[in-house]
Image (cartoon, rainbow, N blue to C red; front, side, top):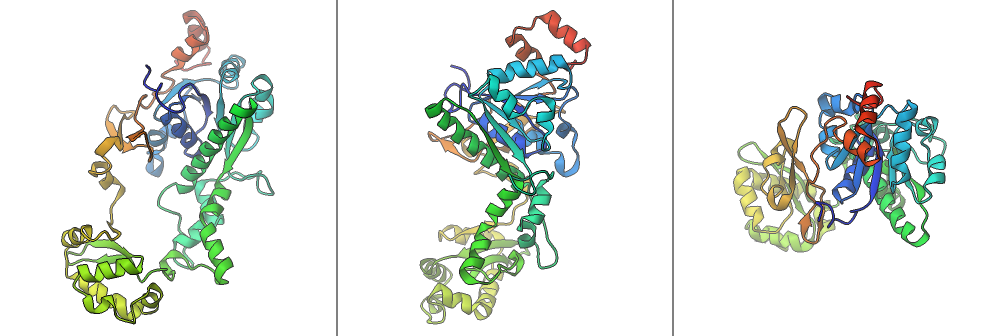
Length: 395
């Protein structure tokens, strides 16, 4: 049995023409689930590999469990290799600017003629409509899709602290691919599927749109929102740290009061129901703040742990690397970075048959699998050497 034979997408072949985050996210999700994903990179490698600053983690996070082949896609022989791979593929993924793949000769209409079962997934800025010709980035979508407005205080739109639209848009793309694969079981036919940044953002802020429809009042940005619950915020502790605490039901309110010796508040008529507590926040919250301020962070979390109430420390991303829960049950995957060092990164956040999805192919170096893939297509060592000499593949 191969390492992926037991996985749900074992036997599915995917050809990936992607860069940055959104497209690679589709590929890594399918790869983690067992698909054979071949990432086609330019001869010098995906530029995402060379990003610095906030982009330095893009390639390591979204390109595990893939094979890498480098091709000059403008050269006739490079295109021939790509066509051969796609002819036998189940899925193609791309996330380049609108029209780029068609210009190269790798649009869905052309490829589906020789591979009618092909599922072709485009990750774009916009779905069909007046904006579809525009290029977009995660931040563009967050700004025009209402998320930045909701994240920052009034007058200070703020993007979310991760590439949430790229990743979620990629997740929707993977969902569409899986649905299309299932439909192909019935029809034998592939199809073109597409997900986008802008519509993904609109979907995520849909709860605020619905709030407006229900109440007639616009949703306030998160820093200024009227919470649905009285106790649902970050509190200071005695040692100048912070802990988030939520009390989100009448039952939890009684548990909270009894756990912190606040029996006089547990059944007080002003605080009996959630709506009452929200209406009385100005008198209630100062009492809770003073209470929590009498505990250190460790003491408060230890006490909350016994109550079953929602609570959380304020954690930085780097703190998660050694988190005991994430490191249990294969929740973290160890990868080899380009400099040879090791990094632990989160596994796909699902369990199947009681197990997490593991690493079966480390991060590929630039064109690491070029020879292997070409040999599987029938190219001889001499032919591969000639292609290297002509800079059609990486040397």
